[in-house]
Image 1 (tube, rainbow, N blue to C red):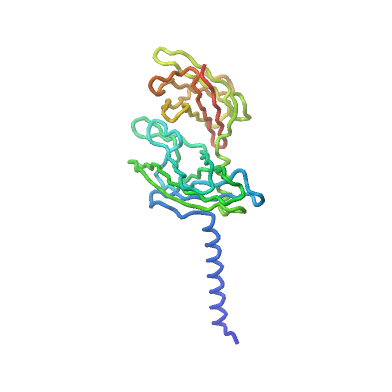
Image 2 (cartoon, rainbow, N blue to C red):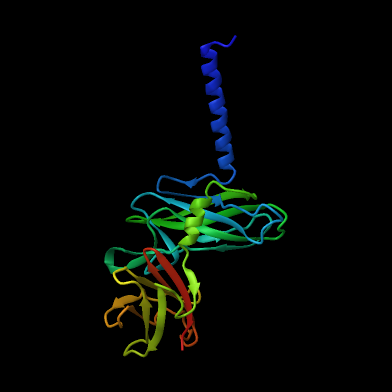
Length: 285
């Protein structure tokens, strides 16, 4: 006959088994953290299609940052280096696209500003498998920089098998996907839109004037990128003089690689508010 002590022991054993099973199940859709107390990175899986294989597989790179530290966007601004991704060694992977949630402009000493993230961030991934009917194993080598008063280069490695079905981190991944700027054409958009882009010859360098439509009282920022990572355009500056309902920004055409002309260059403009972000590609006249 089972005593009360036996019942307590049995209940405890069952609880331990359930906890272990849940931990094992959770571990199947995230990789281990690779890093230290300042920062760490891991791979997470998103919910996948359950029948017939998916044209795209969802995943993410999660970067954890200690308070006071930051890391960089794809274009770092006045200083810094963007993250570098190496997916060599992955299985059944044809292509990986890294998506970038809207960053922040972060002022630093000396009057410079960088573009990046000062809180934990998930970079969504869109993976095209070689064979839709076979599982994907993603292997990542991530090189990135973290900065407080000094900057430190970091390397992280992660591996994760991406299986069909639900995933424990899908809500977090979906939220990160929702913060990726929407790709629009010039003039398109609702409460946030890039209405006009005008090039003007200046006394020293040509300048680009950009008018952004946004709701009154909402902070707006604008970022500008060149067609390749070798470009280093200045950060746009907010100026007065815009018509009602618009915010005006200006930046000089400076920072192109040697020998490259600005005429015909494809620039990417990203407009950001606290609750929205859009991305517009424009070709300079």
